[in-house]
Structure formats: C-alpha cells, structure tokens
Image (tube, rainbow, N blue to C red):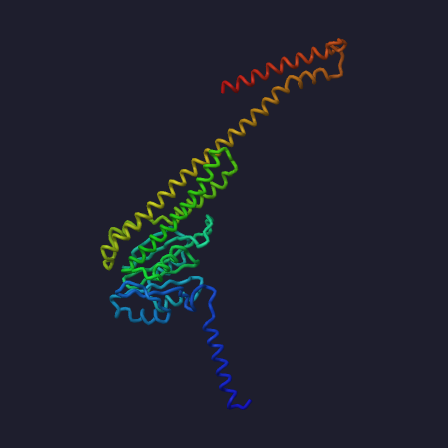
Length: 358
C-alpha cells in the first residue's frame, strides 16, 4: 500500500478503536468518572438528565444559577468517583471521613451549613439476610446534592425512577425527604413480608403443626433487630436538625422533613411490635417443646417404674445360691408372677396418681 494511503487508513483504524473504547460499558454501572446518574432541576422543578461533563461545567459556574440545583449520584465501587468529587465538588472533609467510616445507624447532621446524611438501605435482592444491608452517603446544600453508595440500593433507585419519570422536586431538601420516604416504603414492604412469614408460622402452630424451628424465627428476629438498629435515625442529631435547620432550608421543607421522620418512626414502631410478636411465638414454641419433652420423660419414667419390680425379683431369684424360695413348689412360677404383677400395679397406681395430682 502506498504511504499516502497508509496514513489515512491508520487514522481511520485508530478512530474506530477510540469509538469502541468510548462505548465500552464499565462493570460498575457508572461512567468513567463513577457517575451513575445526574439530574439538573430548574425552575419548573422537573429533573433533566445530565452527564459528568455537563456537571463539571455547572459546578464551575454554580453561582450563576441561583434558581437551580443539581443531584449527582456516584458509585463508590468505581475508584474514580471520589477523585472526581475532590476535584470538582466543594465538599468538606467531614463528608470524606464519613465515606470511610464503618457501618453506622442512619443520621442527618448539620456540618458547615451543609447536611451530611448516612442512610442505611437494603439491596435489590434482599432475602432477610443481614449482609443485604448497605449504606448511602449524602451531602446536601442549597444547590448541590451528592449521593454515593457502594452497592445498588432500593430506596435511592426508587428516587431515581421517580425523578426520571418527571416527578416534580422543589428543592434539594425535598429530594432528601423523598429519599427518606422511599426508604420508609421499602422498609414497610419488608415488614409486610416478615408479617406474612410470621402469620404462616403462627397458623401452623395453632393447627398443631410444629414443623417450624425456633431457629427460623430467631434468624428473622435478628434481621429485624439489625434493620431497626441501622435504619433508625439517631435521635439526638435529628432533633438538633429539626429544631435548628440551616437558614437556606425553607419552612415547608423543614415541615416535610419532620413528617418524613415521623412516618419512618411509625415503621420502626411496627418493627418493634413484630419483634415482640416473634418473641412470644418463640416462647410458645419453646413451651410446647418442653411439654413434649416432659411427656416423653414421663413415659420413660413410667416404663422404668413398671419394670422395676420384675427386675428386682428376677435379680433375686436368678442368684445361684441355696435357699431360693418356691424353688421346688409346682406353683412357684405363678406365685412369683402374681407378686410381680401386684407390685407392678401398685407402682403404676402411685405413678399415675402423682401425674394426676400434678
């Protein structure tokens, strides 16, 4: 091939390779910057999807858009996400310290006139396994909402679908409130599923079908305790926030946030009630198991008592010594049999009378 034609061919090949590299889908569910989704909310309150490049431009000139706010959702499994945030988002050190904390209970704190929220949520394929709980981190101010998670979570995806479908969001705090309500809805569904399981166990128990093990109820109860511990908002931080919200939070947003926390508290109360119900079922199953064990032990005791006279007499008569009574008597066997039957009847009468007295 002539040199004049070789160079355009190489350029075309490299161009195709570049396009192929750009269209590669990353395994993290995000773009190369770690952004899962981004939305810009204008005065009409409906979110418009944006990409990382548009987000960079908007953040660089955020002061020129007083009537807008932006929501950027990142995947922490992509290591580029934290680098991008440090480079383009003006977040405090408290937020990055929170990202590297261990799993803690849900909380919302006011730090440097910004809201930092730690929201624990369940995975999409939640199967009542304590490991199916992960954390969502948020940084909220008047114009920017940053959320980041390590694994796909139900509540934030519900919020994402709501925004994608055009549901109006008035402010950044309303977005946070919407997320808390979505989390309460997810938790309510989990509670309903748990109640159905408990109802089935209780119906089988009332029908006399004790095919359910206490371990099943114990495992379910441990999951509910973990959910309550992780998802319950820390009361002290939430109380301080509701009493003294930031000056950029509108009164209606403050009221909506208070209502959302009240709804969440009702769901947590249902979890506590269900835990108490499971505890009572465990006690009932334990009582029935103990009753069955006592019945088996009583039968074993009766058999032992009834066999005691014949064992004693058989042991005495089986000794190879002289002077065994009735050894030469033709009716000796029947006499001994009568004595054994008499003692057995007396022992059985005493044992059953003891049981009737109990």
